[in-house]
Image (cartoon, rainbow, N blue to C red; front, side, top):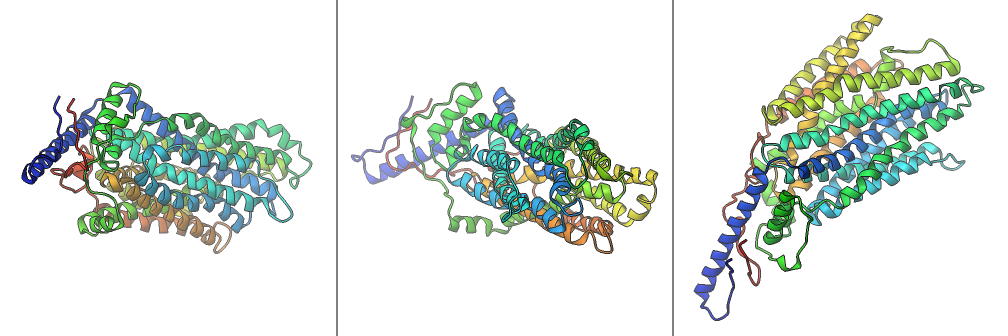
Length: 544
């Protein structure tokens, strides 16, 4: 056991030497502690992080993509002509991405300022409240129910936005270098299961209410469908409630404690606690502040003012923006695309046609999820720590460029006959596959690795918010353009526009570093030797 103390009786030269020796010892302890995290074997704690963070993404995806089916239900109940008008449909679909945009920026910054642990769970509570409130929304003479839903979906989106930087950073900062890509992919892959579950629940609800729908007096009085969309959306808060306790009790990441709270002793203790799977203890005696780079506006400008750092942030942000143009452009409008190509369009009118149309939309979304989305995530899981992030992202953007060119320019021939339409659906599934075995997953992973601890969550939030800006642009553009020349006549040109953005994503990917199997500190592009300068005030370090 060795202790270092500053004493007033020594000369100034001795004091400086002592402080330098202490700083060197602290610096060595910091790097040794981080090496323990980077070299740790996969444990139950790592599995817990994946589950706790993953449930949040399952909830996010369910809540986001359930509206794809619920909007059709809302149209039957509250729309004129049994469908929402263009602005109503746009409002309920774009409200969540707009809220998510602000949530990603806000929570990304807060997680770097006040801590990952303190914010983790807060965003989930916002999601739960926003989701449950939608299911209880009512129509009124002054405020239309669509307006009420837009407000609650915006609030829910703020919570969903907070989940992105928090879950990414927590999973990356706890992971060892060998499994970090797979851990982060396992968390993000729950997005696919959430999307699939939303379609499955909608299918089950539709089947359960079949007799009620068919007994309705007329298509203008579909009370049973009003129950259906409320159940579909309201069930989205259930997994969030289940995961809330575990989020509130997850420990602070050692990297935050070490580099932002600047408490190396407590971080070292926390690392041992995590690796041995014992109860976490925050010891007030272990408050040893050190001098290290601190986040500030001036420091932020200095760090990202360097070209090598700025181009990484720009590459992350633009790649996510380009990807989400297509990912949300299709994901939030798959029901419209399926109807546009005539997939399962019911020949009957009246209440029987309502049931058949909802059933077909649910089946179509299940096919798209199971045939492309889910396999894509797990293909990335298998290869992300072998091939690396950058090759997978490049491959995905190249494949998507080709697929959207074929789907867009060959749209008329691919939708001319029922047999050709099946071919279009296959290409659509391949597009979903290469979105996830490609940039949709890697744009989530890379920003959680490529920046220093003091800006990791903020930079991830900026990158993710850029993606949601792409989602907003895509949704507004889709709504405004799709009916040019007739109902859904412009869809083929929208697919061509998607191809252009996938092409630009190839070039933005070239700006990114390969982050595979490297420590987060090496990826930060900062010299780690001497990162800790000296203790602040009275130094009292105990080597264990």
